[in-house]
Image (cartoon, rainbow, N blue to C red; front, side, top):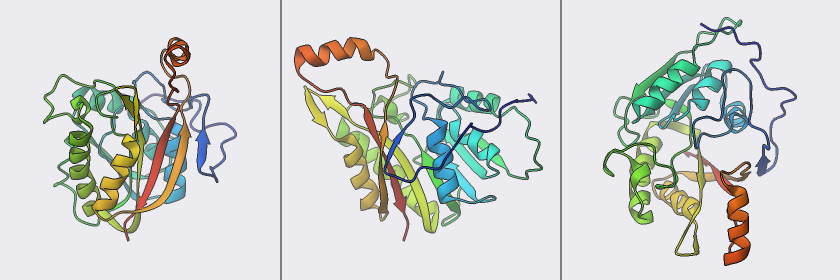
Length: 251
């Protein structure tokens, strides 16, 4: 295992408002921004610290670039992490290959699995769910068919139908009075704003979750921002520079 010099962020403070902004991505442990679409470790750390305690069981059903797994290891939480992409599983395992001086006894399980089927997990067994799903087909994560990978779905309603299947499973496995955090962004179609985040939020409410918080996450360093800034003025549209971090509660 690798020896890591920096196992925690410098000058870290927990967020206390509904607007979060991180101009620079966290660079502690093995965090990096190479995996396109992964979320900031500051977001994950804030969620874990506020909505769980040491020894709790966490779930990230779409682990992607491994950010949740790294923070779970650093903060002594148990974690079940899934992804349908073998590359994501391989990357996450590689990023977890570092030593911690503390005598932690947490267990982290990384497996290939579809978030729409959590049959391996018992009802009411997870203390906290946190995940950063794809925003329809904005980023292509695999060449799989639509039925196998929701990141290849272009139709917004179809995407939300599949998200609802995931939401039902997440609701089933979450313990009573515990939390589920989802980071979701919006998009545009035919020059019109599409509130994808709120469409997804409605599906989570539909399956039984209650909305505890709606946090606005400021997006920084978006790819090709300079190019699109010129387009914004020329074609009269505003760049989407925020995401919604929904904190749901099972009551």
